[in-house]
Amino acid sequence: MVYFAKWKMILVAIVCVFGLAFAFPNLLSDEEAAGMPGWLPSQKMNLGLDLQGGAHLLLEVDVKTVFQQRNESMIDSLRIGMRRATPRIGYRRLGVRGDCFGFDLRKEADQDRVRQVLRDLEPNSFDPLLEAENDGLSYRVCWTDNGRQEILGSTLDQLMEILRRRIDETGTKDLTIQRQGAERILVQVPGAKDTEGLKSRIGTEAKMTFHLLDRDNSAATVCLPGRRKPPGTLCLPSADETEADASGNRVMYLVKRRVMVDGANLVDAQGTFQDAQAVVSFRFDGVGARRFGDVTRKNVGQPFAIVLDKEVISAPVIREPILGGSGIISGNFTLHSAQELALLLRAGALPAPLTILEERTVGAELGADSIAAGKFASILSIILVIVFMAAAYGLFGFMANVALALNIILIAAVLSMLQATLTLPGIAGIVLTIGMAVDANVLIFERIREEERNGRTPISAVDSGYQRALTTIIDANLTTLIAAFLLYMFGSGPIKGFAVTLAIGLMTSMFTAIMVTRLMVVTWLHRRKPKKLPL
Image (cartoon, rainbow, N blue to C red; front, side, top):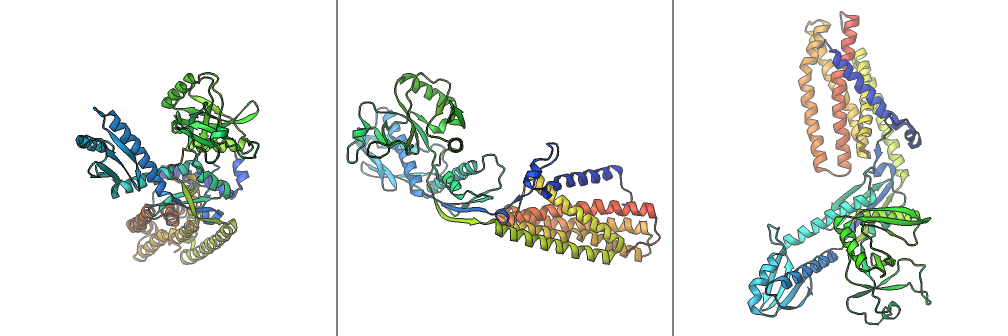
């Protein structure tokens, strides 16, 4: 133990240099850190919601709409299945019935075949998601409890992923998006200042579809209140509120109900400029490009409505076939609104509406108070530990204090490298680590004292002290590390922040105690060759 290999010395030096390099940007402002040379680390620790403020939103999923949409999808699939059957299965009154959907068979002989069609609606499911009941020729199909849970669970997973892409497309923010119960989602965005913009981005459905306009009827007359619309058409308002008729009402468009191309086939959208005007460029995948090309080729000279959330944002005339799978959305956009729309289109449409149940804004003043309190507790704990170690162990205590300072630097460096989030419980974990950081050195020094009292020489006492204390140090830190790991795995939010800083502190304290302090002790022994240890 009194021999320290050169490669270990080099390792300690490298770790110390890298630790200082990665911890240093935390002492700079954001502007100063951004202005550092590119080859130097510039990442800083992220501050959590409780330290830098931000937005806290509790969202509720519209479960009724989820199952209404799923029922409509099943009705379409069931209609196609019965029409494609050979011979065709006759039916009537196919539609939604309460929370379920149903239909009436025309012939009793088709009952076995229609049950097969119903089974084909869920071919990949191990547990039945649908249950069909019939009263004679009248069928009612409902979701089982397992089916409702699976649909709701997949919807919430999809919603959380879409929200994450909308709020943090680049993945650099440390936001929290997690389930709260069966129908709610918690969203916490540290540092969010524009709460209204955040709510708008979250709540926008962003469902884009492409429709042909009905040229046989006039929207000005058909879309009046109380007028009956032609079958297969919809009256949709213009998204541009500046477009108004003589009465001051928004212009209405009569579009065909059939969706020609779905925005689900979009793979990219970007806000850009064309002819000095802000526009949104978009690009389809292979399937969408083929459909878009077919529609534009067959309808040259016809207006083509681009519909976003049941509003027509543009209705250009198709001048020529668009076969490249890309296009431009023009309208009354600013560059900011074009970029926002492009972001929503890239993230995807919400599968269900969301309602904001709770909204809280955490001010930066509270975070400043928390940081000040955490700084005071950390500094006070450091001072008390330094005084105790110097008084109890003299020169060896001074070496332990140097290792303690390096330990704090390494914790900051690791948090910066991992871009981990520092929360108030995280600060508590660091304060706890400061006290535990010297624990290994205390065990070693006490063992060295005991060996010296038993008549060993200084070098032999140091050698034996490190050897016998090493197992105890590893066992003690390993058990605490297991507890931190479990807290991280099964905890959430602040508990995870505490577990992260505690685990990092344990690993860095073991490194500084076993490697750094021992390097200093061994170097001092070889140079001074003392006859008695200053313990």
